Image (cartoon, rainbow, N blue to C red; front, side):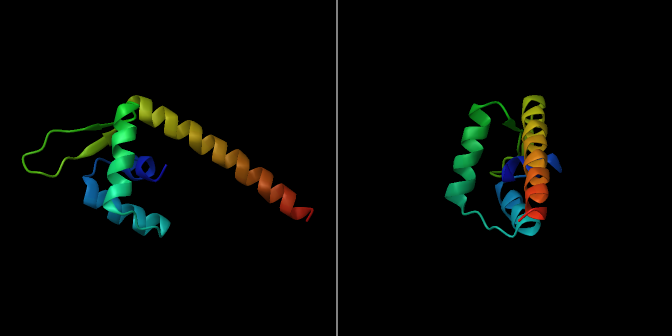
Length: 90
């Protein structure tokens, strides 16, 4: 979800994603964690690497990745609303 959220803001290479994720979430992903996630997301067709003139490869959300991210956000929104309702009764 963190990688998808970062790429929802536009294409980025790995280091730029790490920085972006840390800024919006407060979490610092290590390179192994990030690149493992990138590999899994590419395998699922949710992100794709773009062309690069140097060793930094920009990644972007695919249409399938955007749809999946939207579905996950809707699920999280329902979860947050249910949690907030339940806290009112706690």
